[in-house]
Each structure stands twice: as C-alpha cells, then as structure tokens.
Length: 401
Image 1 (cartoon, rainbow, N blue to C red):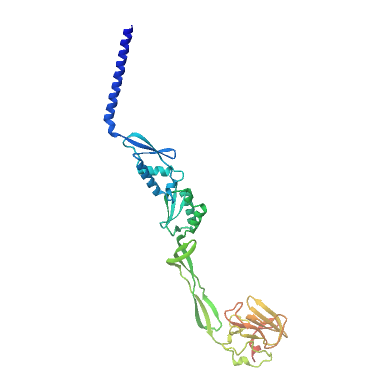
Image 2: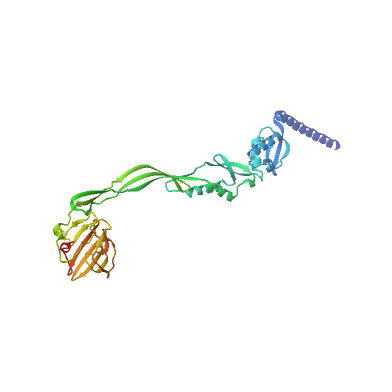
C-alpha cells in the first residue's frame, strides 16, 4: 500500500513538472514575440487624477511649457499643480504627446480658467469669463442705436479669442460695461424724404386797373419732390447726410398777382367850392396819392378809394364826435365820425387807429394811418359820407378840398 501511494505521488510530481515546463515555454514564446514592443513608461497623476502616460518625464515638462505659453497670466507656472510620475511596463504606442499633456494641464488645473481675450483693432483690452454674457452686452450696445432699415456696427473691430488665465485676471462686470459703453457705434440708413417745393410769386402789371389794385389771378400751388438720403449716425447723432437721388413728383405752380398801374387824379371840377366845409382826408404832401375807385364805378362802390403809401396820416374831414373806432371784417380798422345834422364820415382799411369812441376830434386832426386791413387789395383809404343813414357820393363834400 505504501508503494502504491509512492507511485501515485511520483506520478503527481511528474504531472506538475510537465505543467510548469509548459507554462515556462509559453512565457518564453511570449517574450520572444513581444519583447521588442515592451518598454518602461510613466503614468502622470496631476491634481489627484491620472492625466497622461508619457515616455519620459521630459515629455511632460515639454507639455507644461506649451501650456504656459497659452496662459495669459503673469506667472503661469504658479497656477500649475505638481505632477507625480509612476513608472510602468507598457507596450509601445498609445503614449501621450506633449500637446496632449498641455491640454490636460489646462483642463485639470483649478487655478487656470478658460475665458476669452477681448481685442479692439487687434489690441488686447480685457479678459472675460463668459462669451455669451459679453456678446449679449455688445448686442445691447448695437441695439440701443438701431434704426429701422439701418445697418448698425462698431467703428472698430471687436474680437473674442479663447484664453487661459487666473480668475483675478478677468474684468469685473462694471469694467466690462464701461468698455462696452465706450465703443463707438455707426448706423447707416437709406431713407426717402418728401420735400415741399415753394411756388414763386409773379407780378403782372396792367393799366386796365387803377393803381392800388392788387389781385391774385392764379393761385400758387406748392410742388413736391422726393429725395433719397444716405444718413450716417455716430452714437445716435447725425454726422453725414448725403442726397443720393432726387425726383420731382409734382411741379410747383407760380402764383400770378395782377397789379393795377392806371392813374385817375381828381379833377379841377371836383375842387369846386362847397358849402359843406370838408377838407381832403389825407396828407396831400405825400406823393403817389390818387383816386383809384370812384363812387359807383360800375360795381356799386359806396365811397371813394384814395391810394396812398402805408402809414400816411388820415385826417378828420370835419370836426365831430368819434362814433366808432374798431375792427370790422370788411372795413378792417375803421373810424366813423358824427358831424351833426345827420352827416357822418367813415375812414376804412387803416393800419392803425389813433382815436377812441366818444372822443371829440377837430377838423384836420390825425385819426388813423393808411393801411390795407379787412377786405383790401392794397394800401389806400376808403372814404364814405353817410347822410341820414344812407351812403352818398363823397365827391361833392370834398369839392373845395
């Protein structure tokens, strides 16, 4: 029995030796096949995290230099964490490059923050942490000067570029707003303006009408034109307005005024003596004074019109009491004097009244000044004589004047 047990034990040892030799052969075969691809590399732990596997520590430090070049802070190395290297056997291939290491350092350093550099015409101005928020502020600045159908832009080139730096390097919100509000905004808009074309007044003289006649024969009509303007604004203020096209859509019509130049001086017969004792109601020393319309004159004229320059003195033809001194739509400023015995005189179209109702005036007293108020076509005095409430021909009352 002991021999049998010994035989079994010998057989087991022989089998174990066979298995060992087989495994050793497999290991030798593996080494022969892959020994050329096995090498020592280094796992890199950074900020408590495995970030890379490099061929040698020099690859890591080259990556650290690349990362430092991308950091805009004054002392980029101070923002980096201390790396730890752990050697290991690895198959060649799959190792990190220095560029990979740089990206891992930038993305795994708590003191290094990804943001944006703001440049103005290529010159770096400030750092911002949010592209979205800063972009919204820029858009709001442009919209504050927007005009319908206009094109709005900054006068200088504003650009944002990715940057890495420390939190303290980023501009505060107040600094960002101050920068944005300092940017000049230009708005360009093309617009069409409708412009009035004024009409001209043309005077047409005629001897068929007495001097003092002034009547519009053709009423003036304003024209209209359309102008296309290219308007430039700077921060909401117009700095340039250029007319690029003009088109007349309605021609102006000239106003034609017919002016009488015919003359009719009062005659010697009209100066015959009269028992009424009236004097001429105007200052005769003023030149260009003549009768332009007589009593009746084919249109039922109820007085005489005496042409005289604006401001000429109007005299009371006879003494009496001022019964009326005011405005009337037809007569304009006019005066009525009651001379007694049922006789009154009216002085109309005056530019200014110099007496008041109830006032007693003497013959030859200046009571008003010549004008063209009320229904009048030129400077003149409309003179009436009213007898017992009825207007009569004034000429006999002025016959000796």
